[in-house]
Amino acid sequence: MESQIHKIHQQLISKEISCTQLVQERLGLLKLNTHNTVNSLLDTLAIELAAKVDSKIENGEEIGLLEGIPFGIKDVFMVKGTYTTASSDLLKKYKSPYTATAIQKILDAGAIPLVKENCDSFGHGSSSENTIFGSVKNAINPKLVSGGSSGGSAVNVAKDYTVFSVGGDTGGSVRQPAGYNKIYGLKPTYGRISRFGLMAYASSTDCVGPIAKSIEDIRIVLNVMSGKDVKDQTTYKSEKISKENILKCDEVKTIGYFKNFIENDAIDTQVKSEFLASIEKIKAKGIAIKELDFFESDTLVSTYYTLAMAETASNLSRLDGTNYGNRIEGGSLKDTYSVTRSGNFSEETKRRIVGGNQVLSQGFSDDIYLKGLNIRDQISNNFEKDFKEVDIILSPVTPNSPPQIGDSLKDPLAMYLSDAYTVGFSLGQLPTITVPQGTETGLQITAAKNNDELVLKFANFLKDTI
Amino acid sequence: MTVDILSSIKGAQSSDAVGKLFEVIKNANKTNNSFNKNHNKAVFLDDLREDIVINSPQIEKQIIIENFPKEKNGYLVVSKVIEE
Image (cartoon, rainbow over all chains, first blue to last red; front, side, top):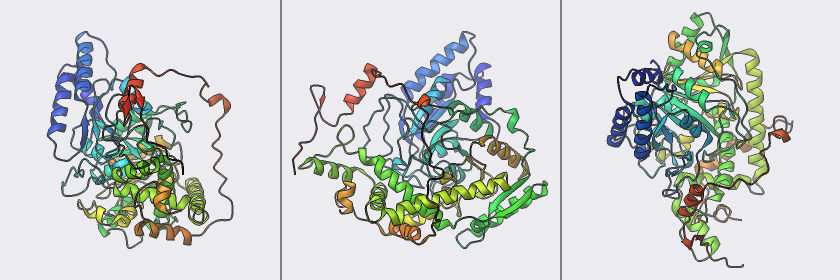
């Protein structure tokens, strides 16, 4: 699809539409939507900002490319003065006192925030069903899940309620819902975009990622959000990616895929055959294909969840109802902590906090947590070795098609295993994009660390190849 | 210490699904090289934030007070601490 940002920008400057009209129309769609994508609407702010854009255009002033473009924000990002609930009971009345760096940069560029979007509570889930705002329904088939945890964001983009949305991806939370709703979703290299103001889930893999309908829109939003931030010391300085640079993809000579992802019983036969057919089409373009060895899916999933649970147990320990949140008074201070947390966290969040505390406790940490860290290093080393032999790694996004609403809640282990193809790239902190092609739930394109540009280049190449 | 105490969650119990994940890790192969290769995350002194106090804007303070679970005369009311 063509860039929606460029298209709307042209419509605004040619006065074909007014910004107020555009914003009101999108807010109307969000209000009426039955996919449960909305946690709160930012209508007053949006209309006020739209009027300012209209007035600039009316006065003959130049407007920036993102000025007046309506966008959505996963409800785990701080936006000053707005409710930031993380789709949880604990924070359902929590107001952000400040704004996340990534969101501030988009606001500074003039884009218009419409909505705080539904998601799995604190990012804990792969289906956007672990939420107090109702399960998010898939954009294409509402009987199916939207994917998660950035499900509301993906559906809003897919249904054209927002032009782009900003999600968070810890183990696949942007890429998997993008695949389930047939749009683009990018997890950049870890540290390219500041995490300041993103509610922490697992800090060593948490990434901010754009979701949109075109590669060009992903590029524009990525450029705006990227950059070093003193408030997040894991960030690094990056170069802007130019439109021209990603149109040609001459340097990709060899791509690889993980043999064991494809040759196992867990993958759906249709996903497998569609993936292999895509590989053949790429091969026909003169690109060499290399089968790669990788860790078994259950090892990847277990490593990711061990580390993510340990980190979330630590990160969420601050949520005890003392300074903010829905405090439930108990008989003593400790009792207040435990009844507040028990009464306000979802079952999935509690499962992860308990698991995390288990692996961090004496007697478990050597056998599980430290071993998990060791395996993570092996995974990173494996990627380093692979990227000496191939330029790109291609993978399906998920082994199966989206489940029916309700199924993931009944079987958490199956939900964890459905992340098999996304979590490895998170552990490696690599740039990976989901493209809506190749299999029913799309394809993932991954490059070496800091090579986000190559990921976008190859995405453009695939658009014309498959 | 039991998991409910460790997690400050009343009645919390460990889960079978999570236990199965941990079993996989326990049985996985570990390499002998210690896990310190890629873990030098130190920040250069020049990259540190300036060590100065920045006064928050009034609106930020107002929102923080609005978020207090219990408030009295503009102050946060905390739960009673009982020495054990």
